[in-house]
Length: 480
Image 1: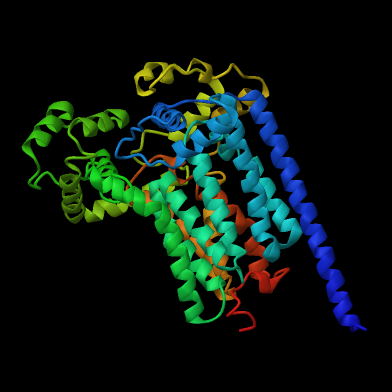
Image 2 (image 1 turned 180 degrees about the vertical axis):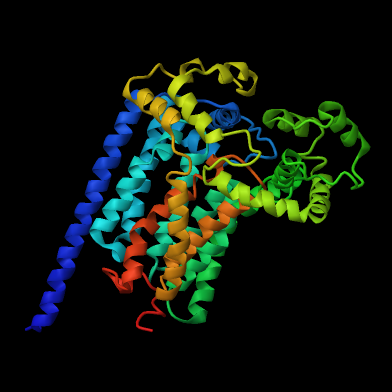
């Protein structure tokens, strides 16, 4: 006959599982309803980047030779090709695929935080994610944001709920991290943090963790090694070209270039002839970089120029760096003149055309008339028209950032290593873009929605107790 205390504990565990399941079902229903509304009322929008992704996806789908520029990676085109294989070459397949990833991401975030924050905290996280208007907006864009975000969320859930999981989960985590890097190259920044977080949650002792590290590394290598070998054959180092070029872009935009550095005279003359002493425009500067080969044949020379510029103007760089942090958090201050996130909201509300796809038809290897956006409108457009007009800068990004930093500090005290290293990884991803002085807030979309975890975690960590402490600390740390 079981002891009364044991029976009571079993009953409480069963009740907890039931309420957690109810919370997850609630999140699922809310996410489905919001995505169904979006699917019915918003179109699929194309941008300049979309044309190359779409071209590569249709080439993969048809089995023809695939052409990707040195700054692109194959993750998103492969995802699109999979949708086309399952559902046909149709824009509704893309929208439905994006919205399905959004629904799964909402449920996964709720599932990840449930042991620490309980059913109510889990439901709050999932519902807040489901209602995030920027996350939802990019599900209507043919861009990498939605897939990249989902891969980060799925990886985060495995890390946070990773206690006692076997080697197959470690291999899966490695594959997901590799896929994330092949979808958005800058996501390489999260890899060491997520991997370390999983290892600290996995088993006892350093020998077991060393074995786990081998498994995770094998999963990453299975995807990245073949791609980097291919890149080497076309004189590209690593996953993609472009990091040094984007750093140079940041220096040029904010007048931090060291003109005493011995640069190619052809580049110097071309720059002076094009701009003189004027401030370069956003797209015009990108065009110049393409013209002088900053992305490929002159990438190494531009990287050396970056280092010289950083040494020569370090104090001014630090001043702009602080502004860049605010830009990435959707607060536009200082000399930045390009509010890209607001532009995306405006286009979703007002545009709904495929002019850019039509203008770049040569990038798509065969006609895709039936992929051009459908006409949609109604309440979805009206909402984003209001959001564009009334948007309060920095919401929700700034409060989430503050809570994420606080959750890291509190989590270290409570040894919630899975949560801590997930948040550290997303913060590292944020600061990678800040370091490049990039003004495009959307680049950090795969990071800030994960910070919703901190909304539920911080109150629990301040109290010093969770609903299921043993499931969210490493097995080797439990009870210590």
